[in-house]
Each structure stands twice: as structure tokens, then as C-alpha cells.
Image (cartoon, rainbow over all chains, first blue to last red; front, top):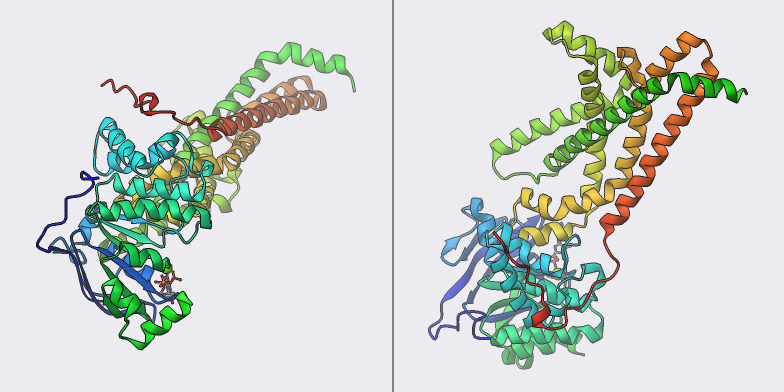
Amino acid sequence: MDTLAQPADTQTETIIDIQHLSKFFGEREVLKDINFSVNKGEVVSIIGSSGSGKSTLLRCINLLEKPSGGKIIFEGTNILEDMKDVNQHRTKMGMVFQSFNLFNNLDVLGNCIVGQMKVLKRSKEEATVKALKYLKLVGMDQFIHAKPKQLSGGQKQRVAIARALSMDPDVMLFDEPTSALDPEMVGDVLDVMKNLADSGLTMIIVTHEMDFARDVSDRVVFMDQGVIAEEGPPEQIFNNPKQERTKAFLRRTLK
Amino acid sequence: MNFEVIADIFINNWDAFLRGAGVTLLIAIVGTIIGSIIGLIIGVIRTIPTPDSRVKRIFLRIVNWILSFYIEVFRGTPMMVQAMVIFYGLDLAFGIDIDNMTAAYLIVSVNTGAYMAEIVRGGILSIDKGQFEAAHAIGMNHFQTMMNVILPQTIRNILPATGNEFVINIKDTSVLNVISVSELFFASNTIAGANFMFFETFFITSIIYLILTFTVTRILRLLERKLDGPDNFNLVGNQMQVDIPKFKE
Ligand SMILES: Nc1ncnc2c1ncn2[C@@H]1O[C@H](COP(=O)(O)OP(=O)(O)OP(=O)(O)O)[C@@H](O)[C@H]1O
Ligand SMILES: [Mg+2]
């Protein structure tokens, strides 16, 4: 695992710093004055009820949604200022979607090398070696010739993770990676993510899997109606929430 | 119906029939291929997301407006009229004197392009949004996304509609007789004009059209199946068998 990412520095180094971020859809303000930062090697989970803006926040970070205001400072640059380099920034942020979104015209290996070759201009050989390394990591190296439609949901998601890792991102964004999966497949994907977290990769995970969030996160962010209502270490959020709405949400979710 | 007469006509004129059929097929093939390329290019342009910069946005809007104009005009007028206007108009307006075959290729391509543009756009929009997002998320731009992810799927999806255009083109080249292109209909007219046996001659003509369209339909069906690839895949047993392609430069 040691080659996956640089080991987390002993002194903390901010990789993403979000300041006063806002997002409007038409008249509706879905994100309101979000301030939040992530350190290198940190694993942050975002929880909150449906419609609270978790996906929108994640999608703003890699500019799949264009924020309406504020700053997103990624590795020292405000990425909202030089929109020309959008694609450059995106290669450094891996994204895993709820609905997998594999490229249906390509097989498993093709999915993992196309971005490396076309965007990072790696040779096919180099890209293949890298792809195989990550496919092996997620346990999908036997399936390199399979097309997405021939895979189960859990297998697709593991390929999607390998595809994102193959770009050597500095941070991985996960948007409810297990929500579309049959229960028996959830474990496989969570195991892969747990390994990644242990390897020191910086991760931001939107999830409804509370046990998982408690288990892997360095920090948990609770969102409610477009604002960050509370954040802190998992023990605090899950065992000792300070805010009334955090308590209410956890009562509803954990039963 | 006198089959001997029909057979006689064919035996005496088979070369003229075949030449006509050849010209028809050639125009239909060239027109469908160039028309499809026009349609793909327009489809890619018309699905470019709205740019952030104002100048680019205005430029894109003008381009889109011109493309819509082209599509409306060529879908909204009969090809026979387009043939007359283009063939005689180019000469009159610009003094460009093109020969009949060049005019035929041009008219059928441009006409097919207008139909294919809409078909391609529908094909692109039918690909789920998630694949666009995944491509953008790994840093691909619009053009890379189109070339590597979207168009390969679009082309497969619109193949039946393209085949349909091809069949229509085989039949519709007959209107090009108005600018004296010696395709199958024009050739048949010449033959019938000499022997005055219109029914018998055009009976042969219709059989030839049917053979052309039927064959084309079958070939396209085969192509579709080939593009779909095998239903199964092989598990790669162990690392030694992983066929890391041999990279010869
Ligand atoms: N493209 C859009 N246009 C308009 N409104 C949107 C759009 N995308 C999201 N919204 C709205 O923004 C709000 C936040 O949505 P978001 O998807 O971020 O929530 P979420 O926290 O991810 O919810 P879930 O847990 O259901 O995924 C919702 O009210 C949603 O209806
Ligand atoms: Mg969501």
C-alpha cells in the first residue's frame, strides 16, 4: 500500500481550503457560506439528510457544478479564478459516483487507461501497468476484458475506483459510492475504501453508511439545509453531538 | 405479363441497367458517408456546453444559428428542388460550372447531413449524463469526451437510422434525373424512351432497386451485430496470462 499515496506528513498541510462557498440553483441557495478545509492524508466524511447539499458540495469541488461565490483553494490556487485549467485540476481529483458511470464502449482495462493516455499523455504501456496495479488492488484484475454491462454493481464500482486511482489523484471524492448497490456488494466496496484510507490517501466521502464513516474518518462533517451544521472527530459527532439538529439526524438514521 | 419481353429488354440493355445501378449506389454511398460525417461534426458542435467567456458564448450562438438554418432549409425543401437550385444556381450566382456527378455528390451529402445532424444530436443526448460527467471528472475536454466515449456509442446507436438514410438515398437519387445524372432511373428512362415498353422496362428497374436496398439492409444488420462484440468475456486467470499487449513502436 505504501506506493498508493505519499505518507501523510507529520505536520499538517492543507490540500483543499473552501471559503465562503455558495451555490444557487436559480433562486434557491443550496449551499450557504460553506467554510471547510481538508488536510493532506485526511479522510473526511460528509453526512446529512437528503437534499442537504452534500453532492452539490462535492461536485463544486471538482467544478462539475459551477459555484456561485466564494473560493476553492486547491493545492494553493483558487481554482475558481483560473477556469482555463479546469481539466488540469480535475485530473488531480478522482471522483467516484453513486451510479458508477463507467464508459460503456470500453472494457475494464480501457476504462482505466483512456484518461491516462488522452489526458495525461501516458504511453499505452505505462497506462496499462498502472491500471493493472489498481485493478489488482480493487480485486478486478481478472476482469480486464469484461464490458461494464457484464459486471455486477459492486464490480463496476470497484472498476470506477480503479479508473479514478489510475490518474494518480491527490484527493479522491466519493459521492455515496455504495448507495446503488445490493447489500451483499456493499462490503466489498467499503473494504477497498478502507484500504485506501489506511494507505494515507486524502479522501472526501459523502455517505449514508454511518458505521463506515465512524470507522474510517478522521473527521465527520454534518450538513443540514445547505450549511455545515457541525463538524468534528467521529467520536464527537456520533457519541457526543453538540447541535440539536445533529442529534435529531442521528436519532432518525441510527434508530 | 410477358416475361420473354422483359428478359429481352434486360439482355439487350443489361450494361446500361448495371451502369445506372452502379451510379445510383455510388452516389448513395458517397452521400451517406459524407452526410454522416457532416452530421457527426454538427452534432458535436451543437452539444458543446455553454462556455463561460462572453465572446465564446456569442460566437457559439452564431455558429449554432447558422447550423439550425442549414438543417431547416435542407429538411424543409424537396431534394429535387435543391438539385435544381444548387446545380443551376451555382452557375448563375458564382459562375461555378460543376459537372452533374459532382453536383449529385454535393446535393445528396448536404441533404443527408441535415437529417443526420438531428439523428446524431438525439444519439448524443440519449447517452446518460453520468458518462459525460465521469469523462469530465478525469479531465477530458468536450472533444476528448466525444471522440473516446460518446461518439463510439452514438455511432452504434444511430446505425439503424443511418442505414435507413442509406436506403432512402438509394431511392431518392432517382430525383437527380432532373439534372441529367445518369443514375438508374435516368438510365431506365433512356431505355424505355427507345423501346416504348415503359412497364416492362421499369419492372426491371424496380427489381434492381429492391435488390440494392435489400442487400444494403442485410449488410448493415451484420455490421450492427459485429459492432456489438461478443456476449462473453474471458476471465484472466493469473498475472502471467494478463495480456499486457506487446508494445512494438
Ligand atoms: N441541477 C440542479 N438543479 C436544481 N436544483 C438542484 C440541482 N441539483 C440539486 N438540486 C437541489 O439542491 C439541493 C441539494 O441537492 P444535493 O443533491 O446536493 O443533496 P444531497 O445532500 O446530495 O442529497 P442526497 O442524500 O439525496 O443525495 C436539493 O434540494 C436539490 O433538489
Ligand atoms: Mg447526493
